[in-house]
Length: 443
Image 1 (cartoon, rainbow, N blue to C red):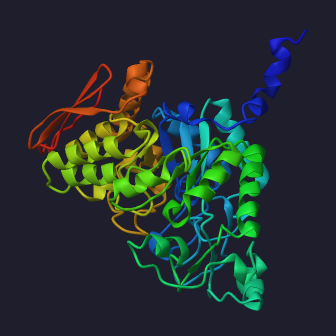
Image 2 (tube, rainbow, N blue to C red):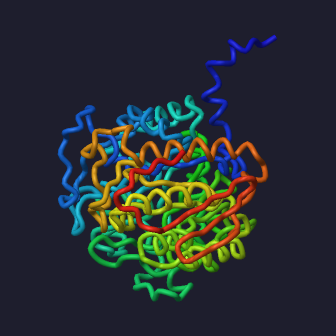
Image 3 (spheres, rainbow, N blue to C red):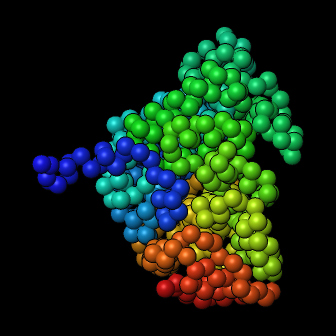
């Protein structure tokens, strides 16, 4: 007879045997982390980091572990980290690859962030707390300083680190014609500076290699979810095969204000979820752009009509590629209303590091990628930190009601500056009436 005490040491490993499902992700809220810019090396919050320099600043998977109390204190029960794979080394035309998106080999760990064992330790630390790990993966292209797809150049470029070196592994070099679906799938996202050489996943050598790697990666590191970078630049079929083979929840980045188009990437023959870019633009327009609340109402109705399952769509207000929400308005009451809407509308809230510290300088890359440790020294008493913690408590409590958990909000009433939403037994009232001097607290 096995005693529970005999099984306890095995629980972290048993928890990693299979990734979390869409049903299990639905109730979660996610904190997005740019690893290099989150927690400082050696615990020194005075470590300098100038965004203008576009250099590595020293954040690692191990320093992230040291700040999990800070994240969990806001009520988050999942983290999403920037890509873990090997990147271009050295200073490029656009600086160093501190953000992790200039992948040369996704199957190897970026030594700037730590070792395989460090990543496994992060995964174990999260699971010990009952939290999930989502990892950003960039498998649509490999990065190069030259973009020269000759075998000789690929072997020499980036120190010979490219996973795929055969010209047949890539689509021919061309500039994207935006709005042309075929062009967006096959042309390169960048052809100069740092070239992003578009992989041909229909080539079995490429597709099978990435699919098999993804499966092994999830199992070895105990990963619960993928955020797929540049999802709109790969076929739905490839992403479906990769995610189902890996047995992992996937949310894809289909950027742009076209909800109907983005919805094509979600479903039984595609992936579990995409980001709600349309709703994000609705929040921006209605709470920082001076639009009437009918702008948000229209985005809500379009989301309900378009997504096959809006209850698992990634909801967000900003990210590492977009202006920080606080840079668009100085009125904190508008920010707080948007936060409540993002968390309470439905779907999975995915909030970029720094919103809780009210960072407002980051309007464009690289200024929206500041080192968090330089602002308020991880204060847990800023109004936004407290408000996020409170709205997370409310959402978690309401998630116990299936009618709330398995639905998204519908519009009950709308006026120029106010909107009332109903979700399950919850009534959510939002306003964009300005209160620039108000000290508001959600609770």
